[in-house]
Length: 89
Image (cartoon, rainbow, N blue to C red; front, side, top):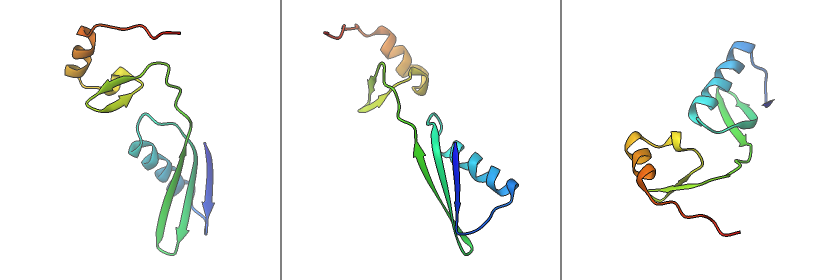
């Protein structure tokens, strides 16, 4: 992950805390770049994500997910019982 600190300097402990916060805020997404913008007493974080490779998408309650693990147990069970349709080439 590329880290840019703009408008000031941060100690390593603070930098690690912002990286951890961004990772927890966006679980399941790979952050390729994080801009930490310091403006006086305020700090803004700007995350840039890696593209997600959708090899298979599942439609659930009008949401598309690329990994069944992101769904709760009931939705996973529902999908397991559905009839599968092959994509045409």
